[in-house]
Length: 424
Image 1 (cartoon, rainbow, N blue to C red):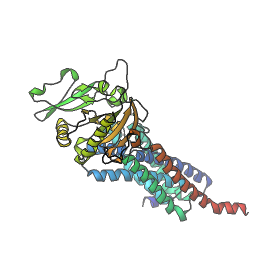
Image 2 (cartoon, one colour):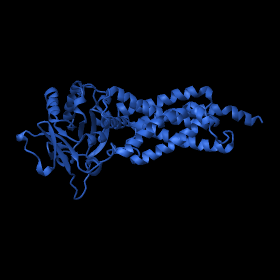
Image 3 (spheres, rainbow, N blue to C red):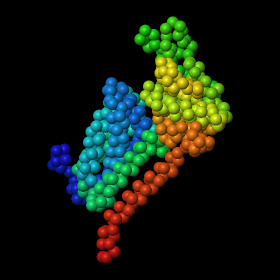
Image 4 (cartoon, one colour):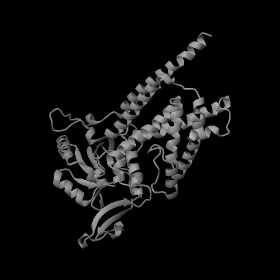
């Protein structure tokens, strides 16, 4: 219906070269934004999932977690797919309509975010490129206008891949972006846009800087915030609930490295700032860690101890959750606390594992991606680097294969035109 209304509007001649040139430019610009947005979110599906969960929390919506995860995968894939279709002229009418439909959802959503500022940033480009909420809104205004234009004129621009084989492009693109998403979800993001990349220092030092935190305690069902200088007496019934940095939208990880705590005491330097090799077990959400993982975790600790590697846990959870974990898993490794945002920035997954060698992050992985059920088995390697995944190689292999297939289809589509040119 929208398309028919637009068709009746007074408009330039769609057959003119000028209109086709403008349409081509608009199509490729729109495609570039959709491809970049979908790709960087698909690279890090955990980060996209966290952002969607933030949206649902501020909206007061409760959605089945598995459904949210599937929705995140679909959103990233559909953005990337629309961008590829626009760039190559595949499904010209359908891709334009889908781009407009997506912008009809995103435009009012980002307006609400810009006006009420419920989250620090919309996450439209993941952690790769962070822009303000108002910049996101105006970007979507432009994309909405571009999508309207494409609904009217996109079908007059030539296809780069002939319609006869566009279904192959559909399948290949879907497989490529799904593999990227699965690798980011099951292992780690294939491109790391976060502060603690492999090869970076875990503990940063800043002269004359002491991060400030606010501590939340509960008493009689009421939460109250305290500073480090006036902490309440727990013997009077106060129970520690949470700790957050006081630096506004920034987190402690962005200003002064990764911090861990033993109760209310920051023990980062004495625990992490040394030359020992160390394995960090990270649990940003203790309540959702399956107790079935305890055998694998405990065997990892036994393996690390046998090979002279220190192992600690950094978790985000209440005292009750930590006590429950201690009762059920009976760990021999020390458990410290850290801000859930900092844990999620350090590594994706719940739980996740990080190997640090002389203060340098060597590799990260979700626990499930380490293909060892019992680390004390004779077949287990003694080298901790054997558990690392070559994310760069994995991404290059996926990309080379995908681009090669797409290039072959473009060449096949151009062959009739080349033959006509040669036989003139």
